[in-house]
Amino acid sequence: MKVAVLGFGTVGVGVYEMLGKANGLEQGPVLVRPGKKDAPFKVTSIEEIVNDPTVGAVAEVMGGVEPAYSYAAAALQAGKHFVTSNKALVAAKGPELDAIAREKGVAFLFSAACGGGVPFLHNLALARESDSIRSLGGILNGTTNYMLDAMQRLHLDYGDVLKDAQRLGYAEADPTADVSGLDALRKIMLACAVAYGVLPTDGLLHEGIESVTAADVAHFQSRGYTCRLIASGGKSDDGVYAYVEPVLLRDGAAECSVLQNFNMARYEGACAGSIVLIGQGAGRWPTASAVLRDLSGILRGEREMFPAALRRGEVDNSAARHSYYVRLPAELAGELPAASAELDGDVCRMITEPMAVSQMHFAAAELRGRGAEVFFAAVRE
Ligand code: HSE
Image (cartoon, rainbow, N blue to C red; front, top):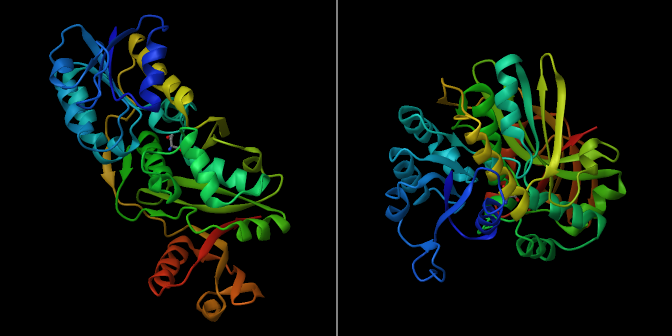
């Protein structure tokens, strides 16, 4: 099967090279931006791919919702299988693309959009058929895991570790999505959609690591905690819950041994119990390997990842409650229900009483709206 590739950045180069060696797959044309055509295999217009009868599948690794969505829809309408690593695209337009693919009888697979090289969505798609998935989530962003790990073990500053993550090809073109938790949120949205047939929309909560400092890391490290950015999702009474936030884990928890750009994806099956998958969650080769895994799956007859009855649905995070570690200006300490607090000059570091996740996220937003610098992380003992 000849595979066209949309995009020739970090992942696109990896996909193209892997296609040259893969069983049953063949390198096709590569779509690049006008002005970037410096080799005969590169093309600059999507029509050259969509109208090419020798192209059997299209692998999209450009990122962003547009023009990726228009290109994906055109490829599917033309009867080509479509594989993508683009979580922004699938989170925004997954149901539409799934519908076109089913109508045309072609594949729409996006394993690389969640977990990099870790086959999380594949396993969820298998597990949902035979088991009831109670909860899912874990460390789903390689960039922030790399950054938090380097800040803790190598005592580096936030700005330096972000630059390293970009240089190593882990971060998105605009790393805001990584450090704000949005990238991990999109991934937990996809995981919920695959596991439960509900693509969560309104009511999602995400907090990233933008406000963490070297002093925060030193403080919670000295108290035996390690910080990881964790995505949480699962079944709620009427639908699903889904949120992303930093979590402080007691040293020795499984997540603390997940280093560098690795992800740790987990789900809890009613019968299977806890299943954990660990592997590189970002970077050229891990992500390209997931794209190739989907393409090889097409050769074996795989066609869809979403269940047939996929719908968009509201999130219900109301049952989720945690104690939080919060660093905020000392004069605002009275605004949160502290179980214990330490003053350090004009800064207060507290552990709160258990609070609803939404209460903590909204309180931080409100305090920041008043100009306060706030870092918070759920505490898991
Ligand atoms: N920027 C993403 C990450 C790439 O760091 O996890 C893989 O999805």
